[in-house]
Length: 265
Image 1: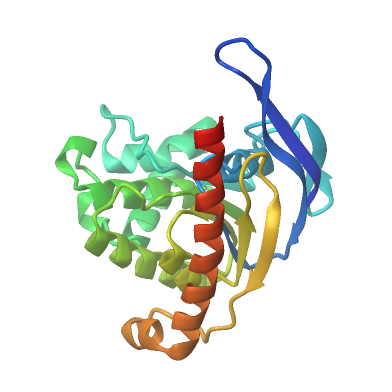
Image 2: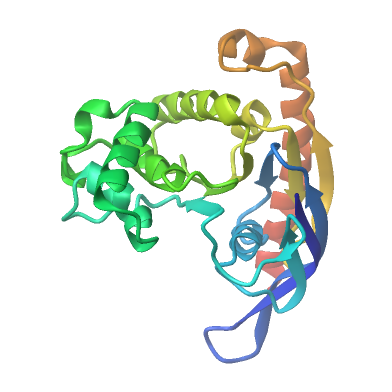
């Protein structure tokens, strides 16, 4: 279980004129084994909260606990998948996947075997010896996902992982992610700007308001699983369309408020 307790965070302004509060007094609980998406306008603190929960940022105020242990930095039971592929260009796909295991000091044979299994799991069994420049965008993101999964984390944090992909590949990656998630039900916290993506993937959607970021809605998505088996029918269903309509309406209100703040500021 992830417990986020009264978390606030501020950054110094680049021009040195003060501080910018990205988050203010955010509290929520995420149950083990659920898929939760953070949705909201740009600049509302979604990524900041994701990085705080993963231990990459220490919050200015408040705390995060995972399984009742205070998060004070990165840990091997958590992994992050970024929007940028962040692959080392001089390493093959397999060697990129091995990197977290190498940092943890695992033996070479174990690293290689684990990397091969993870690449097979994301559909890249034949591409282990390829370098990043030889892979498509979707394949690079699969390598990034395999790298995160290589340490078998209990919690997977994903920061807009499919945002840089074209729409067709993005939908394919959503289906592949759902298949992987259905196989072991890790806790996943997923940042996205796409309403459709959030509804398709999530058990819950946490809607954030304009900066400073705060939770304005906590929505349960009650759609049947596994969702990838009948994806097209699901997305045409009245239930899916109703969720999308209601959430998009809330998001438009926040986007309009963000635009008004930019104009007045």
